[in-house]
Image (cartoon, rainbow, N blue to C red; front, side, top):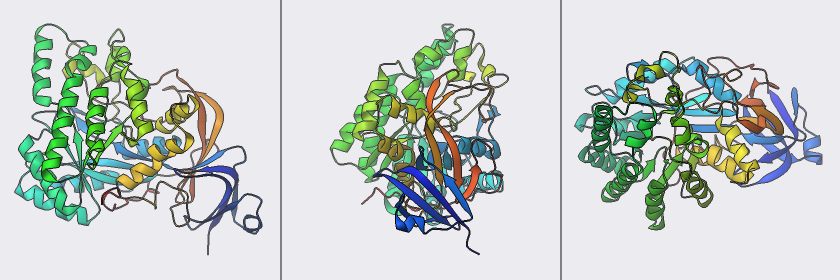
Length: 467
């Protein structure tokens, strides 16, 4: 029995094309596109027809950087795989790539199996994993090869958080050398954590304890320095590099210089760096704690450089680094000591809408919106063309998007399991209307019709931008 759906009358937008077309879906996959009103489209019959006149028909978003249920600073991210993936669906994201964590002294496999167990049967949308390497040694280096073979093709290392996730330059170099041979992609949190810890200690000793000092001690130059160092280590290793959550103009300049040399160096930024700033960190009465994340929010003038980087392709991806902690009882752990505020912001539900607002505001084109939010993350992490596009053979991960609907972002109406919104009160033009995940309607005209367990684990190929 073939299960068919037709999406009729919308403007189909991909990273490369815009066309008024109908989309035919069979058994969860896209099988054909045809001009709206054409004989071919008119001949299609289906069990379900979705009318999309006046709407955009876009690929489901691919958020390549989320942290569901992440233990951090004595607590854990407030979104489970169930609540977080449901919120993602509400926001038009149909695939997440989350981070499994290796604990120091334990095998990569042990950490990965823990994350498989957390997500299994819980996700409303499809999911995949990166691997955080906290302990680079001969054993874990050998494990990297095995993980690449089973579809875990990217490995995150930290130049920050000494005593937790931190790797020194020697360990980073060894992991990069291994990735140069096994095809994996090293993802880097690029901040000089050793130097930052000195500045944290000094600030607290001087009584500078408010949330805004989190941003002041994690200096722009220490992000730029670490980014430069990561690039040079990758050059020595002959390995590609993907720098996560780029927040500062000076760090972006290091990426641009490397790319100008033809190096396989890639950069990601996040909506918080494009729409928020140190003004938020400085909000009174400890409200600034809501905006504590690392890399930190920067002064507003950095935003123009990041938008320019997205237009010139010196930055290729916008992910969320979704890692929510409730203000009450979690962020409050840092009252009187900013270094104890759990690092992370909620955002998995807001990314597609915020980036559409960037289209409305003239920062990026519609096709660039789809490129940085859907197609490029899918290609970067070996999911394309199954994910990230609307084309025959692709999974039917499709969003019906109303570009004219107006909304006000608020914790009162969002679906993330967190008690505040980083974008509270922000007015946006554009809103998700319906969402299909592998052909199954999970948001139906602003009603959630999905279920935990619909989402499938998706093994990944290696990065599709490498020669």
